[in-house]
Amino acid sequence: MNSRRLLAGTVHLLRNGTCVAFAGTSGATQNSLVFDREMKKRQRDWAFSQSDYDAAQYLKEEIGWRVADKVFDLTKFNQLVLDIGCGSGYIAPHLIKENVGKIIQVDMSRKMVENSKGCDDERVEVERRCVDEEKLDGFEENQFDLLVTSMSAHWINALPQWFHRCHQILKPDCPFIGSMLAEDTLYELRCSLQLAEMERLGGVGSHISPFVRSQDVGGLLNSAGFDMITLDSDEIEVGFPNMFALMYDLQLMAESHCTHRRSLTLRRDVLLAAEAIYKSMYAKDTVYPATFKIISFIGWKKGPNSPKPAKRGSQSVSLKDIGKIVEDPELMRKISEDSGKKNK
Image (cartoon, rainbow, N blue to C red; front, side, top):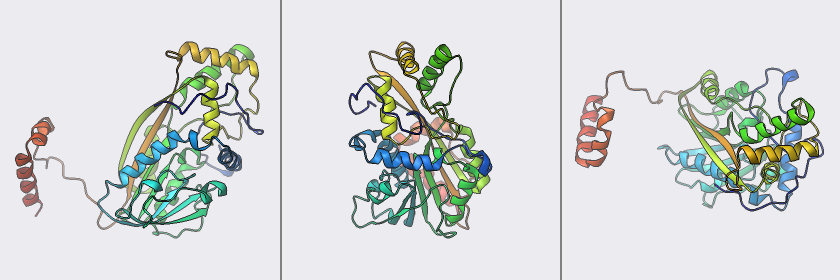
């Protein structure tokens, strides 16, 4: 995937922080919170007010479409859906009346949520609320038929408590579908900045936040009470004309660094050194690759009609014969009928 266009060769730094980063670990207490949520809100408001904002949402639009695509795999109708951390609307435009009845979009940025995109299918009702997606206040237990989230959960401070809250407001026998950034995201930028600072300053500052580990997401979902958990990991590589174009796009995505212990400055000579290191270590044919690792998950809240895994040894087909079955519709029909008889 290529970024939208060549951007200016300078980076516009935010007043209260530097321009790079992402996130993803959880904090245990109020005194050990990792992320400054108020700063994140200001970053989102600032990004949305920029003229280039829409052009920089290519990654979020892609991930939002992937989350919406998983909704089409559900066989159940979802009357009430909550889009957690909707931003300017990346999931809702792809949903249709046959899948959902009403969508409630929530985000802590009032500017974003009040101007977020609704469904292209006008039959679907869309309600917009300015709510901190970390707390999810104002919702009742067992209220929603489906929860969705895209590119927002990696900014949550206390992920265990957040997953538990999501489990509370979800109805039994209903799923939670989402995607978030995981470890090794932007490793090229991280390494370039670290090496540049080691060379120029003799130490390393905090410019890119830590990410949640992919293997931890399943454990967090399970601890919160979710069942039938499915995890999927993918990498998206985006090409940029230079390191500064990448950093500027991160600002426009509202994904700038916002940890409480962030370094507030980044010297010009360090930036120039990092650009040279990035080019020599990672650039290919004048294209600077940036890797985004996406962890997608689906978890179900247990209920009386929850699907049960088949008993061990109950399979009637070997995995090595899958190719033959797919190519032979008659054999597939016969196996399906035999399986139905056994389940009766």
